[in-house]
Image 1 (cartoon, rainbow, N blue to C red):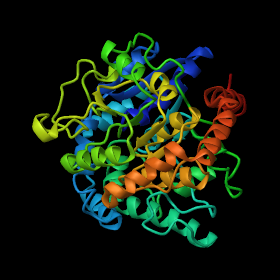
Image 2: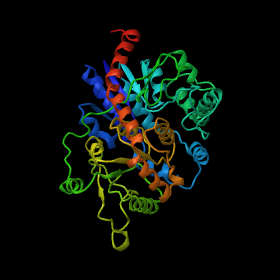
Image 3: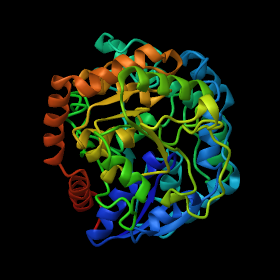
Image 4: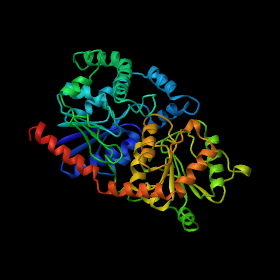
Length: 442
């Protein structure tokens, strides 16, 4: 079959979908992968047809999203996010449609594609890396509510957040459907009932060992396991200086926040160095959006707030037990460190859990808070430290637990054994073949 896969967001959002697409290609399907041009090399390195989507550079988007994270409560952030939403450019919507014209089926984490699939009468499979369907088991990941609610309140929070976003988007979506796609408008309550009535599948790229499948989900929602690339970057080699650092002392802690752009990097840098000094830990500080990242080859570099100090003279000079490095594949790095300090992104969570590594989560916003709370709930990390509440004392205490608590390490290793027994990509391919036989004429 000719398949089209859509994914947007940061590297941690796109890479799992590349793993899924590569699995479908290995099963004999033709796969076109649609994402931002920043990820072209990542896609093509795994023998997938690349289709470039326009829109804002994901690095710039991350700068804007995180600009007020440290000083703003999450309820205020959600409100601001809703009021600042803008309809996509018409050119980008046309690109989405063009990518699907010769498709036999569409797989997408991009909600807008639902309308294009309807217009072209193509079967659609939704994909997601975090729960987006209502359930009584837990609240919506964006709900500005406590983590433990009554079952009815959990389910209500999903419907509430859905409606908040739908009401903001409803006008432009219906205008686009009527004027461009020549489809009827969607009701005040949104497209959700339509999706359920049509039993549109959704595959979740996370593990049931991390989030057990909710008992009130219908059978067309499947948790397949994590979608992981076994060969992140086959040609990558560590620098001699990096190898020397690992060889001349005990395993360090790795500290990195993926694609995030911290709004107050000087304060973050000070907190990290002070906590490392208090705990006497060696550390590798991982840079964020760097042009040295294989996915970013050929992309322009932007100003960013990573973990490198503004200047390294005098009192700001890094101590001998700390190194700053550009991007390092986690497959190489995680087996060599004692713990990972991270932001709680979906892609990072998958890799740190599969490595059986204790960690410290410093969530900034959105689903990061949800995943960080899940890590703590299953005993794989200390309680999360939200970025806006981070202090040296809190980080030092969390590092002591992550590096020295044997119960924590045991739980992380036990969970890793369960995850190694899963193969999320193979399970997703199996789901696809079963779905194809049931819904699509061979």
